[in-house]
Image (cartoon, rainbow, N blue to C red; front, top):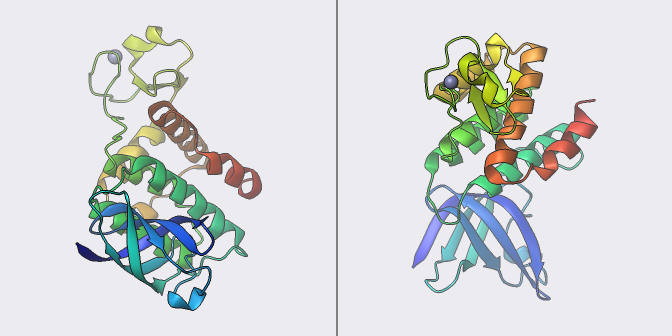
Length: 247
Ligand SMILES: [Zn+2]
């Protein structure tokens, strides 16, 4: 079957002497893996540099027997101005790539995730804002790892005002269930409200949300713990990017 789709490059690696294998996230087919034969021997064969998160139009032959399909065409549409020279954009996009790759299964179509990546990249190009928490919350919600920050892990009652984040259990506890994890961290009033707002609001509206530094810090800690707990490992890029950008 011949398929055609706009697709973001997540990562690429050399294969044999002349080819590359590329992991894309496409609008219609979700995460797909493809081989670009001969690209290393003759880079002009494809009009793209395969930059991370660049948007390309790809045509590929979908094989039934293999996860790796043959890409016959890959043309750059937009690279969103991300270059290795710009540390911030490059760092933020590295975290986004790792999260997409980690959370999205192969060949599972999710156009809303595609649109989210598009919004994230356009903002990266035009704003100075740190959109990592917004991207992370929306990505978790859309990929099915819905954080469930509206109810207690212990008794399932709705969280109203007071809530504690359990790092051991990756979720919230109400004051009555706090005995289940005495090390649970008390959340600030704005933290849970911000998560719930970001989950249900459009990207442009989320950009107008002004997070207090204390709320932002707590949010980042909770999100990183949530990913670690539910995915089984922390994001490798997150710590690295934090070290060279946030200090
Ligand atoms: Zn409870």
